[in-house]
Amino acid sequence: MSDPSTTTGAPSTVRCTTEVPATWPYTELLLPRTGLLVILSGPSAVGKDAVLARLEESGFPFTRIVTATCRAIRPGEIPGKSYYFLTPEEFARWRAEGKLLEWAEVYGVPYGTPLEDVRRALAAGQTVLLKIDVQGAAQVKQKAPDAVFIYLGPGSFEELVQRLVRRGTETEEAFQRRLQQAREELRQLPMYDYLVINRQGELECAVEHVKAIITAERLRVHPRQVRLG
Ligand code: 5GP
Image 1 (tube, protein in one colour):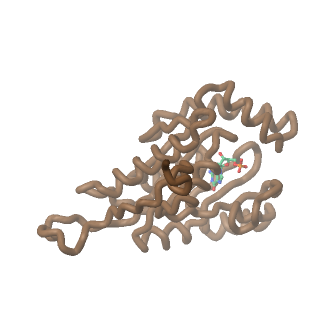
Image 2 (image 1 turned 180 degrees about the vertical axis):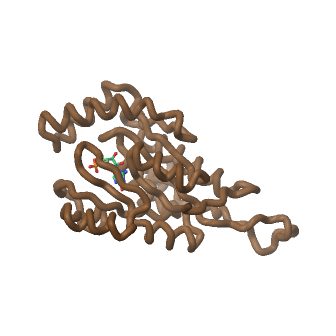
Image 3 (image 1 turned 120 degrees about the vertical axis):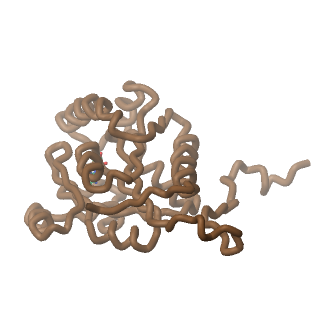
């Protein structure tokens, strides 16, 4: 009989490094390993946070940048971990002081990425993950074209509607606005390098696909040289 403690379907704990060992014979042929900037976009309620949470839980090595917003805190969110929740005045000050790598109004609310946090993590050679909308992604593409752009999409438009309904955090007006925005956003797909589908009930597959993309990028002989122009 099999041991139940090993057959629970628990995720594998195997850790495989993408670092080249010091014993590799031709180190002179290796190009410098720099930080990797990964952008994750996708319509509201497609499951971006769920994918990121699973990546974190699985111990996959990456640095998630906390971004800033002026929207209200949702139940379960933690200031400084989910977002930096700023007043409109504080946000305007961050913008004026050049503290944001990019910023955009999403559903009428400003969101932005703290530049210094990204710079520091990249300089430390880390895989830096940004969960930002398509407008922000377009700005990052201008400044750092060597970033990796991943679009997380739903299995169907109906799945997306169902998820938004289940989340139930929006007023009817905000709900309609997010649906309309999702339709427009899906058309921005050609700006991205990869499309990962988060099918209903198959979160683990989406997580594995994101891991596969990052792992392959980390194993490149000619690594992307990400600079924040
Ligand atoms: P939510 O309010 O549901 O957490 O996020 C709404 C949207 O804002 C999502 O599409 C998310 O990717 C985007 N977003 C979150 N942080 C940032 C940011 O710093 N910059 C930009 N451009 N979009 C962001």
